[in-house]
Length: 294
Length: 340
Image 1 (cartoon, chains in turn green, purple):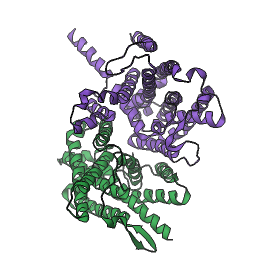
Image 2 (spheres, rainbow over the protein chains, first blue to last red):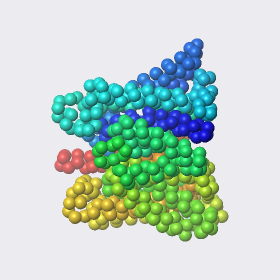
Image 3 (tube, rainbow over the protein chains, first blue to last red):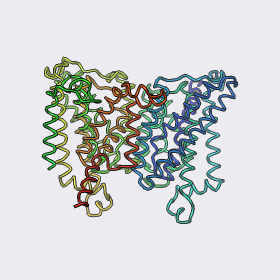
Image 4 (tube, chains in turn green, blue):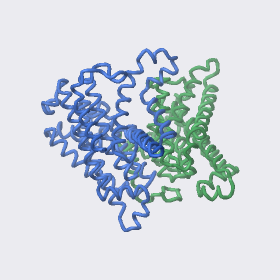
């Protein structure tokens, strides 16, 4: 029983990371049909921003320093997102395949840039002592960093959903996901929404990177690239453009992965996720909550 | 005209093992040295990989993110058949080719139920599943992270040892020429015309009464077969099958090669693969030179990363020369026509 609780907590923590990475991907794809392959690099940028803050900001207590680190990571992710969208993606509006190719080159270059600056060796991060301790819950000792990731992801989900439901920008984005041509025909500036989703996506990925550094207890330039593949699977299973679908799929994928790894065989978890993807695509190609047929 | 150019290229490349001089910035030792020949041979095999990917991506317009899979199947398959079944190298190559064709027919039939970006993701997921399988290695046959080294006693004599690097080089050249000829024949065949029609407008192909699915699957399987052959040769060059050729990063590198060279024209793709390999393998040597060592640290670090330079080059290419290197000849031709 206690091992089941522990594994569930681990799985939900991982689901939180997947959600932070995949929700931005899903929104960007839903609105712009751009598959952002540089998203993993955004994730790594967030991780390294957080690492620098934790490493350099001596004198500030570790707990407060971590709050600052997450904020800086979110901000740097958002800035990178906006710069990439305004500076590069915008030049190729309407050319979806070219945009995807561009993000491939960009992701490669960004990861190599981080590798050139910080080297490819994993870096350990200074952490508040509380993160390394455990909390007793239903007879299981759950590492606090799992709980932290989960709480942040849930807060991000709630904030993101209310942004989409209750603000004007959110309304335009939701409408744009449904039918970008119609929104443009009504005289709405969809281009500004493009920049906003890239900023949001970058921000969430940046926060995810900071938290992944805690979850995996270290950071290396390729961290985001590994997670990106699972994030793609989450996005496809959830349904492109649907934030709630992404949240459900993140939990489904992460729990499948952790349970299979624990109870069936190590290393089989990731493969079972791929099988899950194939099954979903064959039975319901548009994903769990996706409306558009690919 | 094209035949003449290709024939000349083939002759020049075939003579490389006799060239007793170096090439500034690329090879410090003479071209005929085993070190340089090995780099060149890898570049030739990469060119073949790029041609095989061009059939799927450039000609049929399918954005596959899983082309590393047939390459890895060829590499690991050949080595597994040799080590575990004791089959001789040529037979192991054929067996792994047959296996790759069977596997990619099944996986292609599943993946082709989707189109566009979903197809890209499904192929990515299949390739990644294999990459994870060989990394985690539950059956204890793939060698895990270390990869599967070549057992030299199972390799034919004339490919063994540093002295015979030139034989390996010629073998790679033969593979590239064969890949080019096969690819040229299939893209010029009637099926090849349908591939290009599918790339341009799949709905219209459907409307004139042809079934796009079969043609797409044929393209996928033929390209996989050529990739598998390349994988079988690649293990001779790098002395084993390693996990990096199964990774998603390698698939994306193939995409970079083809787009760099010019998709939809075989020689463009081949050139892209060749240039990519040379840059990737030799850029780090160039960047340790004095010129770059004098730069400040924060520039020197990234500039000595081949992938940083390639990534930036690729982004610039997408923005300013979307047709790749091959499109440059078009521009020259266009300008000449205009001036006359």
